[in-house]
Amino acid sequence: MLSYPVPSEAALEPPAEWAELRQQCPVARIKLPSGDEAKLLTRYEDVKQVLSDPRFTRQLNAGDAARISANQSGGVFNSGSAKALPQSGEGHLRWRRMVGKWFTAKRMAALRPGIEAMAERLIDEMVKSGQPADLKASLGFPLPVWVICDMLGVPDSDRDRFSHWSDTLLNLTRYTDAEIQAARTEFSAYMAAHIAAKREEPSTDLLSELIAASDADGYRMSEAELVATGLALLMAGHETTANMIGKMMSMLLADRRRWERLLADPSLVRTAVEEALRFDANSGFGMPRYIGEEAEVGGTVLARGTTVVCSMAAANRDETTFDGAGEMDLGRSPNPHLAFGAGAHSCLGQALARTELQAVLGVLLRKLPSLELAVPVEDLRRLEGLVVGGLREVPVRW
Image: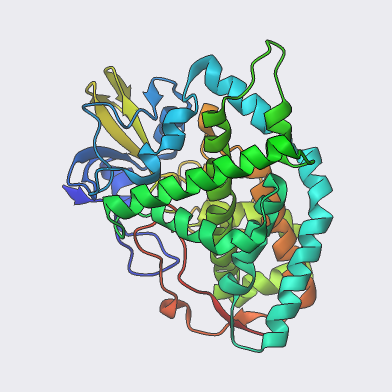
């Protein structure tokens, strides 16, 4: 039985096992960090099917569900947020509709000039501090934190606290149950106090709007739902994009021809971002799902009570869906990758993530055309244990 997550020899390359599994064992037995058994899906069609099938739920606290991590808390997969927010059916759709109003393409386009201006400021500060620099610490991390803090109306001076809380809740191996519970309690208390302050003095931010909002049926979010929404957006809104900025730039700079092609044709920025999302071999744990009834996937019958892990990163390398899947094609179109998931639980903030990634790439091409990695690609190091994949640092010079 394969131990999961499957380690990779190189920071930007997929494990060799992925291709073997897709071809020979698309529904594979795996052992999770907890020691429990689950099934791993690596083919595009199978992953898309499960993520789109409402029978496969996020009910990972079911009695017969596999525990993801060695600690009892289950980290982010079994958090208070996961329990406070409706996970399926009409309740989930209603929640998504209310929050989703903030993440329209039109609203993201309005945010873009501000995001680009902040990216320019951070790059200027990085250049002033001298080279080599860590692109992740200088730009990749602070930019998404600033954006999501601005959207939620929380001071970005608190970003180090958010970072600690997010890292604790998104890590499967590094922290004890007591540390995870403490982070969850502190983060929830902080958010509850912030929401109480917003009730007293509303502003134009997302949380102020959600506090006041009701849908056509008169539904309003409860206090627990507001807190859980704030926590979920803060974690998802900075950790994933911060890491993706570093990985995207590493992929583009790993082969100089890719960077030169973008310099010659900046109109490729949009498709290059999509291809970086597809090509990312270090996207983290994947999406676990629980099935409460017998179901068939990829020609395999799954017993009731099976926990399934969907590897979107492995699915995004499926040759049967993507021509030249093992090559990075900056002009690839169409590009139906699964980096943001699929179905009712696809990433709510994907328009924001795309906007941030496109803004960062466009500004870097314009301001630092001579940008390059300051270390050999093989010296880049993965972050270990995180639910979301990332690199420890991205050393660059220009």
